[in-house]
Image (cartoon, rainbow, N blue to C red; front, side, top):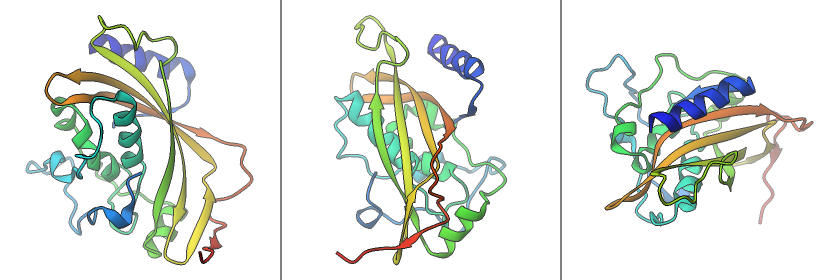
Length: 214
């Protein structure tokens, strides 16, 4: 685990991108995320696993399925209810190892920004488009002697609200997951990083268009 985490951190330093050490289910069919009172890192009673959503439908024998659902959940945001982007990652704790899940916390400062505030007022949410790419940069992810494997997952997302759809955001998020296979639970995420990559996309997320009636 230490070797994998070190390798990912070295990769982050070499690439020089925007990184975070952290840490699509359909909003209409899942429970109501978020709470009106959000505990943060200073709250001693904070329980990361209390945020976890139901992931019983995920095939835990497939690391690809686990990696994809993890990234979907972790990038589905509800700015009207969420304290920050980390809320989504907390909802994905059901796919993390217990050790990793228990280290999760909410940042003290809430998320801000024009897009976040706009779609919060509209009670909007994000719809991620997830692609799993593996092995990660030559990692021996199919080596049965290697307990931990690296999986790379790319995410593009767009916003949606009752009366509006947006173009895809002008950024891509790339998750680098360290995963292991628990003999009883199946595949789980033991650690992760993500990189935010700006795209040369002329469509601005703020330039939403009314949703088309089906």
